[in-house]
Length: 347
Image (cartoon, rainbow, N blue to C red; front, top):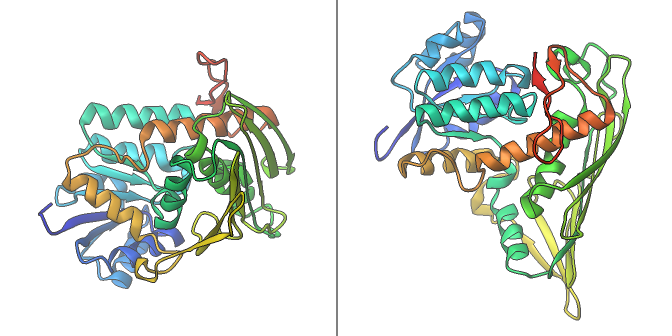
């Protein structure tokens, strides 16, 4: 890594890997130097598409490439523990897609590995790096709506997805919660931290994954959070934060908003809009820029997406799955922590 350029490796060649790489190569201080897939043919095709000089047909080769400063892990989340773990153990820094892992047991293993090797590790929760979301959080933290009383957020896709689709496949960690519900949960915890109590209900598929899930989160402050996710119905992907002195509404696309509206008692509504200079709404460039900023600063985690926060979100997702009865192949019931919450762990 130089003062000007951070060298990236891309692990996996699916849709999200392509979207991230397309945004990454537009950053003047980023260079994509290698890509890996389990298939050499897929890696070479991806490399040709984006002009990447090196293509590997196995993950270990990428992990051992010392010309790489940081690896972006974009595999299905069932493989995050293995893929990110290979890279961290080989001395690479890692940005790992969301959900961070299949469960908190795997997440804790990655965090411990990163800290053992002194490597940077961050979940690719691009919402946390979005400038408009950061502005919203700043307003809430500064007391613009008083004490937060409730948070609501939803994310649903209409489908229908056949049983063969990855979103319905237990072997790939399918279901609405991990793919989509991670966003509403992460949004609520961005503003309120980890909940003290969780209630949840879900409709399960014949394969045993959740088709839609609703959860009620509560905090010791008295705040409540209502989150919903679905792969059987398209929702508004809206969010609302209500406080003792006002409310903030994101009408649509809360995890990559173009605007939000601040309502305060006795005042006219105030609209905040995305800065056109920040790029397209769906740009992943902000999380990449945060990784590179942190690496140049010698940081091993990002203050925008701290590892303890990622672990807290994974604990909530585990607790919701425990409430609704979703288990994935190879998982066992974990031991309760000091709060009494069970943690799902690999067998």
